[in-house]
Image (cartoon, rainbow, N blue to C red; front, side, top):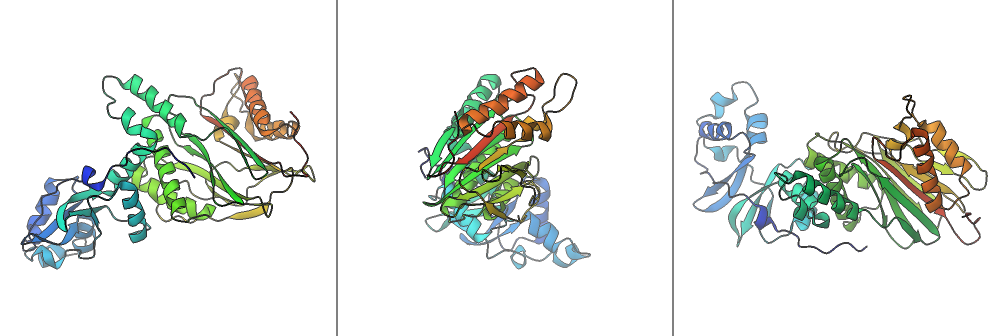
Length: 405
């Protein structure tokens, strides 16, 4: 898989030089430090210049001092009795992508709030997980260049960010080992919340993804780029199942958005060799499959789960079904079924499925435009109040029925 080449920041560039404390400092004084600094996540502990561990806000207040009489018990004791000695450390010259990979190995559930940075085996500073994830998302497709300043020139910067986000999307038409895919997003604002992608797993399998972030604007755009960053990282680590990818992306988005935004997402992996498709669903609209042999149009509604970023360590079920010669699959976002006419009536699933069945003989690129056009005619407008994504995959194996123009 080939991606855009860009400069990747190192941990040394994003660390914060948090002043260390002595292991002999009383617990009561450490509590005062945290109370005076509400955003402080952890304090490094150094004994005669040697790093010995950390004390995190979460561990101190919830694990140790959350019990009755805990302050009376620990208040005068040195903080060394409560320090976390098995905390994670990383080198300052490690880039942020490598740091995320190491963090996921150390803490797959991403419960860690921050970690220590060392330089020449000496304490250098700390990096929060939220800063790490935000840096990774901003490096995708050079978003850092367009999001440096949203002050007085907010409109022009948002426009640039929208252009960069569009650049994150793959080429709209793609063929792979007897499979043809075609996708398109119609955005309702400069920076949309919809996202689709495809990725090759091996010579016989390709993954398809469609997602929708709650809301629009810069924040939803950042979640979208964080999703792409975590997807790329997980694939590079060898994760190749829809459920496994959703599990990892969920924890990454939760660490980035902190439950302020959610993302619905559906991932389908098509095995062209065996004529199968496996999919997992994180609260997204159910896909359709049209069976060429029987002419049957099916909504695949057997599995679904919580949206990404809802809560940590969500697991997702998978469904395996056939995807044979001439079959067509439609992935889409809720924007097309929820768009309304002037009377307020929704386009709905019945109209979508009827339009799909009526035009299923068309090749994906033409079928995609046909579905969008029928929704536009229904609403009486060429724009939609929400983002609309149409993503179609059709088998074109030798011997399969050929799609009409």
